[in-house]
Image (tube, rainbow, N blue to C red; front, side, top):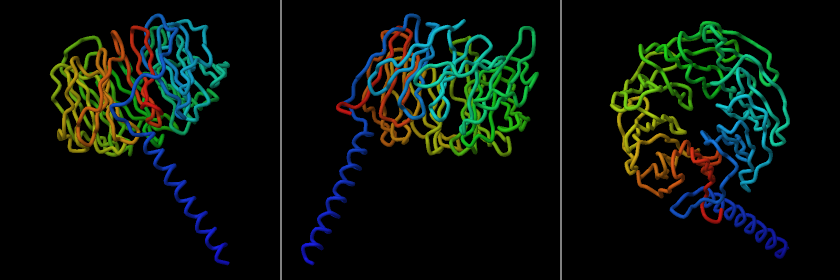
Length: 379
């Protein structure tokens, strides 16, 4: 009897120790410090890489580049699964479906859909182009279209069938810059040079609200809880050093609750923290700024770059901030505001720096045809 009880106690203790060991490993695996470096360089690009896109499950990486082809890369090994050719123009936007099973690419007034990771052609949806976005539940696709000589349109499709649900004609008077969904998929929005940010019903495509500014509306983001939407306003995409501001709206009422006017030279980056409590901006100057939501009060600044901050995003757990400039990126500790590490990622033209969905890998792209993957040493 004693031996049996003792054995049960030993087995329980070993189980507890195993769980603690696994938790310790997980914590260690997701902790970034100064000991991280490049572990893979993805080659074969000849005309400049614009942006890296991770699949939601973090297994694959694809690129928006000017090579008239798309690769599906294995993140764990840095090896190419397949190269997809046959484009009529460079794929200006690349995105994965929420379940990571499909890859979407643009190609002259159409979206081509591919199976992942085989790269086998799945479907072509005609009459829609970038910018586009797939709903978080993977059931709908919203995108822009402008026929020759016609007005700007938005189209809502069932996904992945490609069945047209709503053709919203004359939706904007000028260029549509971005199309994005909120977190629960109940709304999608479009920003335009016509001075408006428009909200649309996520299932029908019917209009919900028009947020007017009188100035060009560029990059915008919904807060993770869907209560707010923030946008860069006044920016001229074709001009450098033109004043811009950030406007924060309450989505439910459509009321503007804060206007941040602190960017005399313009803005490049905008991102909410995962908990929705902060907004980070990257301006055309050597710093990123942290703003409280919804008050819009300045909390702290992150300074240390030589050039303007063109990229700023949070790690999925909100503990770290990534900022990037023309050639380098810096990893920051959000709690302390301290610099963890800076690294030169490109000889010229760093075009994107992003965390993988699990926060364990950083990808950088540049116009010098360099794509690099980074992670903590030994991970």
